[in-house]
Structures are given as structure tokens and as C-alpha cells.
Image 1 (cartoon, rainbow, N blue to C red):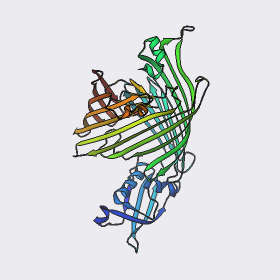
Image 2 (cartoon, helix red, strand yellow):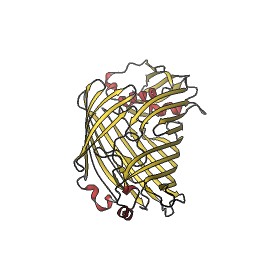
Image 3 (cartoon, rainbow, N blue to C red):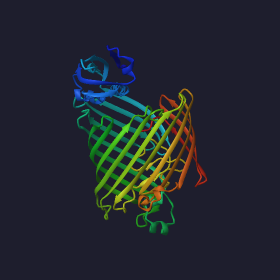
Image 4 (tube, rainbow, N blue to C red):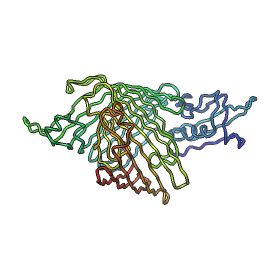
Length: 435
């Protein structure tokens, strides 16, 4: 893949490099397929505004990350009032199709081989289509299509399918009377989830991605732990099509997804489940809201910290539990309302509301070799924001010591975790980028 060359003709005073710059007008030349609004959206500039020089450079880096241009030339021309006009010249890359391969292993999805096909300018000058297909222990796919219009409303389609088998907390699938009659606290369940979304997206205050859309989710959960006596077939806990409207607000300036040394992160989501198919005969509408925030910083070139907090709640009807929150395990690509939590196996802690705090210390002992020390604390149960339990000392704690290598196939990680409440340890192992 050709490397983007960034050329500049202006020599800026050091004061500007450490301070801010006022940009009066913006001129874009050389673009044939990609619109002006697309380029300005990546630069996060509109003109007639004052921006910090660091944000100006961050916008350039955002444009670089698209890999849509072979070169980008810019000139900052001084104006009579002490501001600048930004003049840009771009050269669009002619490469629009990419084929990528990857391998991955984790404790939930097990082993997988990824085949990714990406096509830019498929139907329009500034669109992109991407298809991931994973072959292995749990076959899955992820399709994304986006017509990117920068500061204007972009239009997107998403479709994914996930499947896995895992022991889950019985409270996620059974009510209290069923748990009492069966005596089960864990159920070996097979989950199949296909989710399709249509959405529109725009930039909010330049840095936040705001999305609004409609979603169809087909969720099926079965188990051989409980057998249907009449047919001796696997028991079906859930086989429902859910229809919802959703909104999402996201900001991510982490400099590294897996080992961040600086940046902030914010992700909030509201799903309003309005209709469901006949399997869920007693369905009544409900909503689920959640939010997560994080801040990463470094105190030396080798030592960095990451602080995070998050929470979520359900309001409306409470009878549908298969979409409730479930904490446990380790993962960077969990679906629905499954939340990673050290010290516990996947989906061990459940409830319709939760709060969580997280802390990590990362020491890069050698280049791309990391020793990590992490801790997380949480309260999770039904209606903890109504009972006040969300503001009490945490009921669940977990700590983890890990070693990781940031390799060309992605992070290779091994973590030993311990929970004081369970007095039990859990190992996590991961190879490759999460998908």
C-alpha cells in the first residue's frame, strides 16, 4: 500500500505550533471522486474558525488513516487580519480493492481465520464496503457499508452474525421460580445472533460520531442442559426477532486500541425495543441505555495508565431478560450487553442494570512487550439505580496480571485473574486482532 506523502509550503512561527491558528477559508484541489465535504470531515475543519495546532495535526492524521490519498499538499497563506487560508492539493489513490487475512484465538469464539474484502468507491465516489468472514470453531460474518459525507449526514448499513457456546448464569435465561425448580445456576447455552442496522451518521462538535437508526435482531438461544421431554431435542429459551430504534454517540482518541498511552474514549448507546415476533408472546416495549468513558495517560515513555467507568440500565418492561447485562470474561469485541470483567468467567454476573470501574497500569518492558496490572469493580443486579445499590461499595471485584506482545498478527496476551469474592482464579488467553 503506498504511503501518503504530506507536503507543506508554509513555515509557521513556533508560537502557532504551540498555540492555535485561525483558518478563514479552505480551498480543496485535485479531488475527483471524494467530495469536498468528505475531505473537510476527515480534517475536522469548516473554515472561519479558530483551532488548536494539535487539533489541526490530528485532522491531518485522520485523513492519512483513510488510505484514500497518495499525497496531500497544504499551504497556510497568511491573511491581512493575522489569520490563514488553507489551500490543499490532493492526489487520490487508484487502489480501491483490498484483500486481508488474519488469525485469532480467544476463550469465547475459540480459533478463527479471517478473510476481509474491502471495496472503496463501490457505488459512489466516497463510499466503502467491507465484508469480514470468519471460518473456524464459530463461523461468523460482519458486513459494513457507508456513504461517508463528512460533516453532512452519512448513510450506512451494517449486518453481522455471531454464534458461540458457553456456560452462562441461569438468571440470564430463567426466572426465579424456574431456577428454584431446576436447581440450576449455570446453563450450557448456544447463542446465535444476527443483527441488521440501517443508520445515518454525522459529526457532532467535530469529534463525536452521532448515529441514529433502526435495527432488526434475530436472537436464538438453545441448550442441551435442559431437554424438551416430548421430543428430547434441545430446549429453546429464545427464538425472537426484535425491532428497535437506536442512537449512539461515540468519541475515540486513544492512540492504540489495545495498549493506549494517551487519549479519551466515550461511547453511549440507547436502544428502544418496540416490537418482537410471536415467540415472545408477552413482549412489551422496553429500552436499554448504557455509557462508557475512559482516559489514558502516560507518566513516562514506558509507563501508562488507563481509567474507565461505565454503567447501564433498562427501563420499561423488565420481563425480557436475554438482552440484559452480563459481566465476565475478557474480550474487545463482545456483542449485545455482554461486558468484560476480570476475575469471572464469561456471563457469570447478570442483571438489568450495572455500574463498573476499571484501572490498568501498562509497563512496556521491551519494545512492544507489555506487563499489565489491572483491576475492575462492579455492582450488577436488577434495578440498582432504584434501590440505591449503584452508589454502594462494589459487590464484585477482580484483578489481573498479564503479559502481552504487540505482534504483526495482533496482540498475543495471557492474563491471570483472581476474584476475592469467588476465591478462584481464571486464565485468559488471546492471539491476534479481535474480530
